[in-house]
Length: 134
Image (tube, rainbow, N blue to C red; front, side, top):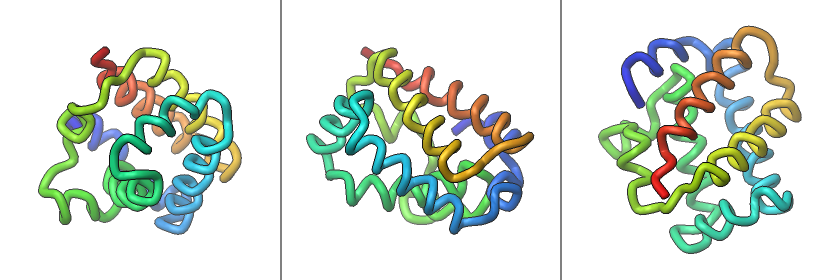
């Protein structure tokens, strides 16, 4: 995650209701990945790796820090570099768009709105698109 992106997300975790809301967001997002047609390829990519259970925990840890809260992921892994984390995964533009669609639905479903939502949408769009490598 770039310093500029990180600075733009400062305090979002508190604005959206803290870690319980982040946990609910991750749960809803991966429920959609496992059930929605647009999540099928993303699910397949995860199943080729460490699996959904692993990624649910890792994404919670990552998003807490991404949203300006405790950096659980960085504490455990030493960094939060999205490109490094995903370097082994072939990500197409369609995959990024499907990820964004599922995440948008999850954000809606857990009730994240207002200025924090606008900042999240902008940061997620940028992050998803910089990961396209295939």
